[in-house]
Image 1 (cartoon, rainbow, N blue to C red):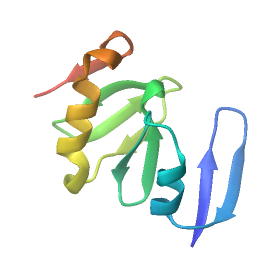
Image 2: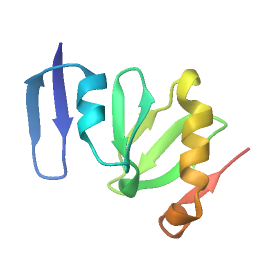
Image 3: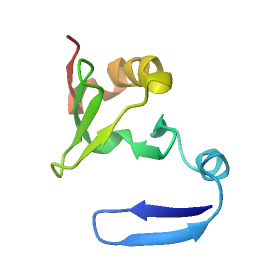
Length: 89
């Protein structure tokens, strides 16, 4: 499967699985959707009512229903509370 990595400076493409890539990434990368792994250090807001993550660069990403509980747990950790505005409606 073809994967596209979007960074602040460039996009990269490779052939692999998300599960394999996720196992190689540090803990600040979290699966939020069957098609997305995000860097939680770049999250500006999580709107649980609409299952949308807004990034610091104004891009948005959907959170899959299967991953919502995990995302809420990860984003509510005190470690990340300084850089997040969590909205839980």
